[in-house]
Image 1 (tube, rainbow, N blue to C red):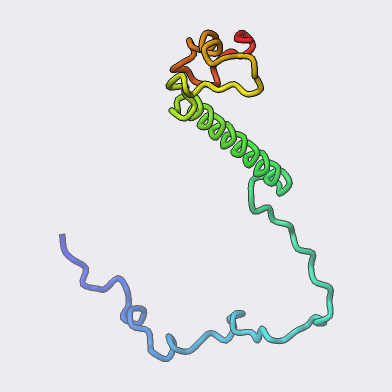
Image 2: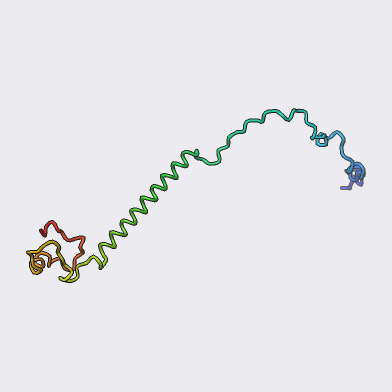
Length: 136
């Protein structure tokens, strides 16, 4: 099989002249002067289209934030109440350690021995768990 010695692309097509490549096309619409204003500058502006920036409306988002704040406040209050309850239940400050810790005010006719007969079994207990209604 013999090769054809003639080129498939002509030399003129391969090497265009420099003048043709640099010279802009005068029929190009991009070169038209865009600074010419055909319309009056006092026309009313177009109404802007409102764009929603979040998936929820603003009112719903505010309600959700207030709801979350209320839930967070309720959780914080519950945790604080639980902490106070546990402290008062287990703290040594609220425990009756000895019989000298038992005092009754407003009784002139009752001796300390009579008070210990009733409240003697409560030594070592927390003051919040002593049933005062049963001890009367």
